[in-house]
Image (cartoon, rainbow, N blue to C red; front, side, top):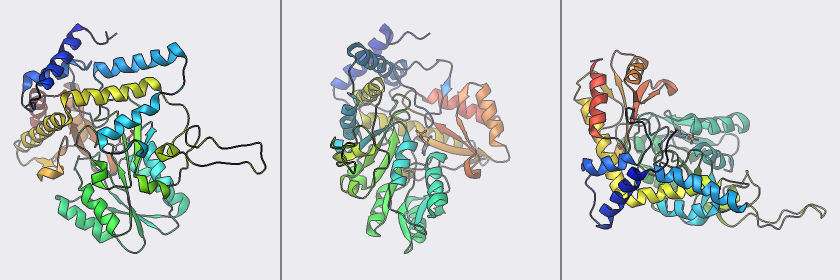
Length: 412
Ligand SMILES: Cc1ncc(COP(=O)(O)O)c(C=O)c1O
């Protein structure tokens, strides 16, 4: 049983705050500082956890906030309170509060974006060959049910070439580009701003799977120019599991149809006693895309996760994440020709997720061997990519990466 938020963690948190009130940028290599950060996580000390891309462990203040949020609701027996988190999320990702719909995960946001688009039989949508099931299946389902056509491209080794591949797929039937900001397979950072500009210029919708953006990259969704961006707080934001959000650009809310509605997504003017029954209107803003009860505790936890990130400073978090990612990629490449790095080496196309294979060795064998050494990465069987994925966050360090590289060296 874990004791939540002991004296040691409180001291560590105070140290993080103290350092930041001095206003100095934190060096991404200041190991003493980042050791303090690691103390804030209940992660087992003998576990080398490098699977943040699946699940970002929460630090103690987030866990405490979830518990306190539940206590608050259950003490007073009140309803609501979770909606306030939309403003915090908006501030964190560069959006307005009324552009944020609260969801439970990325998949839910993608389904809302996908289902609500006015598409007809024969309309084409562009995706990658590197989709997570959460972005593939909603569109495949519309292909099956509505007869839309999916066109795919494989991300290229540079942002410019990737953009060209997308441009080459656009024709008069294309209606939307529905791609991940960062594919779950090898972590390539796609040039989403340029892709959204291309979409706008061609009159296409841009529907982004943003599972890996918030908490890894500095985000400004207004600047990015996408129509929708679906994400979660349980990966890079290190928030409670089962909390997500969908950004829907303000002007786009006239186009994207709300298909999943209920309490809160209307203007409270519906009436079932008149004939015909009267609907009223959709709620102002993105609340029209979700309805019903949410968890106060979990959303208090999301706000606490944003507090935690902002205490360290999102730019500092990003710099540390980027430095560890680069260190992972470069260290693996130093193992020689047998390493096949799937993540591009182009600086702007890589960050905290690394995909690689060892030539001539089954990725599953490497995965099993790492697991035996208590090194947790992810194997990627999707669409025959067949690689290993390493995803590190601020609680990791270079010593852990060195141990990973030594473990991989056994296969060289
Ligand atoms: C790129 C990508 N999209 C979508 C998802 C689905 O996320 P969720 O489980 O929160 O619905 C994931 C999960 O790993 C992902 O990596």
